[in-house]
Amino acid sequence: MRTNTAIETLLDNAQQARRCAAGANESQRKSLRLRAHQQLLVTPYRNMYARPEYWQSLSPPERHLHVARTLSELHSAWTFAGLTAVCAYGLEHSYALHRELTVHIASTTNVVNRKNALLRRIHVHNIQRYRTNGIPVTDIRRTLIDCASMYSFTDTLPMFDSAARKGVSLIGLPESCRALGIDSANVVALCTYADPLSENGGESFARATIIELGFIVPRLQRPFTNPTNPNAPLRADFTWELPGGIIIVGEFDGMEKYVMNDTTRNSVQARVHAERERENQLKAQGVTTIVRFEFEDLTHPERLERKLLQAGVPKRR
Image 1 (cartoon, one colour):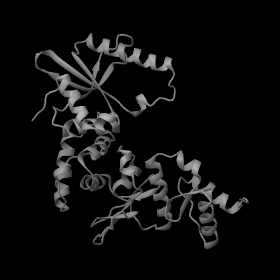
Image 2 (tube, one colour; image 1 turned 60 degrees about the vertical axis):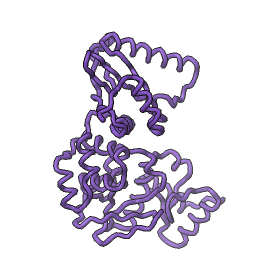
Image 3 (tube, one colour; image 1 turned 45 degrees about the horizontal axis):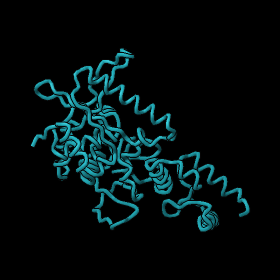
Image 4 (cartoon, one colour; image 1 turned 180 degrees about the horizontal axis):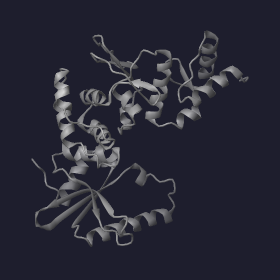
C-alpha cells in the first residue's frame, strides 16, 4: 500500500505517547480502517489502531494502559477504576484477567453493565481523581476494594501484596468496605493474609492457592546462610517450621524460571546443577524437605495439594 505520511505520523505519535492511534477526522478513520482490513494494523479496541509488531511487544497490562490512555484523550472527564487503575498503579496481577480487554471507569450513576461489554462502569458515590501513568484513576485503596468485589481471593491477593510492598496501608479497608455497602468478606481475608514480603505476583498467586487449599500459611523469604557468599543469604520462597525441628521449604519455579530462551543441553545442565547445589546448602542448615512446584501446579490445584501433602505440610483445617 502507498505510504500515507499523515497516518504514519499519527501512528508514530501514538507510540511515543504510549497509546493507540485514533483518527481525528473521517478521512483518517477511513484510512486506518482500510489498513486494518488489509491486516497492516491491529484493532485492539473499537476505533483504535496499532502496528502489529509494536502491539505484540507489549505485555497485557501495557496494552490495557494504551487503550485507557487513548480513551482518556477522547473522554477527559472519565476516571478509570478497577483493573484499569490496577494497571496504572503497577500492582501485580494475573495476566489471565486480561482475557478480554475490558476497561473499567468510575461512575456516580446507577450502574447496569452489559455482559461482555468493552467498558465496565463501577459505581463510586464520591469520585476522587488521582493521576498516574498518564490517566486519572480512583484512589488506590478504593481500587483494591473494587477489585476484591469483582475478583476471587487468588486473583486479588497479588494486588494486595503488591500494594503493601509499595507502602499502602491496608488498615481500615474492611470498615471502609462496609461503609460503602460492599460485602467485606473477601477484603477481610485479603487484609489478613497480605504480605509485603511476597516478591512477585507469581509467588502471591501460589500462596493464595496454598491458603485456599487449607494449608498452614508459610513464612516468606526466610533467609539461610549462603556459604559461597555470606553477604547474599539464600532466601526460601516458602518455609514451614514444624514441631520436632522439621523445616519444609517450598520453591516456586515461576514462568521465567523454566521458559528459557537458551534451551541448550548445557543451560539445562547448569540449571539442574544450580538447583542441586542450592538444595544441598539448604539441607546442610536443617531443612528436612524441599518441595518444588510450577505454574501448572497452580492451575491444577489438586497437583499442588498432592505435592504439599507428600512433603508433610499440614493443613490448618
